[in-house]
Image (cartoon, rainbow, N blue to C red; front, side):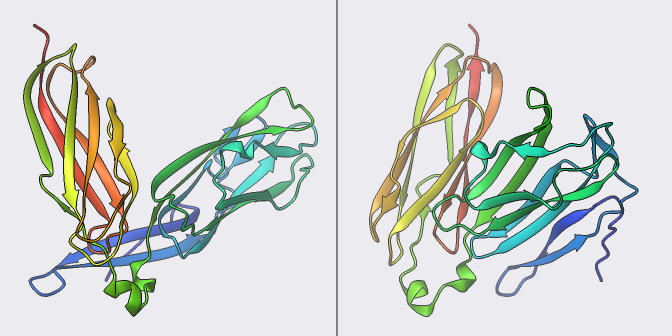
Length: 270
């Protein structure tokens, strides 16, 4: 039995439970999803004259076939009518943002709604956006920011038998590079090589980097039986002593869609 406490957790939630066994498959991933209706008396977040129950839409892990919705409750605690507008220039195309009632009279409550539409155009991995909003009755003053975040994965369970028979694979020659000692003024270049032992094209969807790591080049598409590489540069200026940097490679390989690689070493200042 699993228990979830919804107190102070208004909005959509998703929890993941991983069960490891000695059978096959070795690990089963269970997900619990739901939506907690916000208590209107708990509008504890204050941005300007606007009160909110929270200021972030966090969709957690989502699949590229899903449609998800969430809401934030708001109330105008100011002394004049408010008409909210959003700067949607930073908003991904697969996200929609709207307000149920706008303008807001003094003391009036409403909801900000956002909809996530699964997107197969290649926006995989973790994304986080800041959306500025303001009162159009006072356009020179930005009220604040809303945060929207999600981590999109490919829905391999939706693949047809034909797609599964042509699935790609990914195999790295090494997952850890240890370059030993280097002076902090140096720029280190290193390369991760990989192959595609599967039956279809391997697509590198995205590469997430630790700070001070830069991608120089990488092969985005590798045919079945082919090889690819990821060439990286490390800036060691602000690092002295032992360190580890991580790189996460997101691909369309159904058995290993996310793979973490490591670079470690020791930076010296003499």
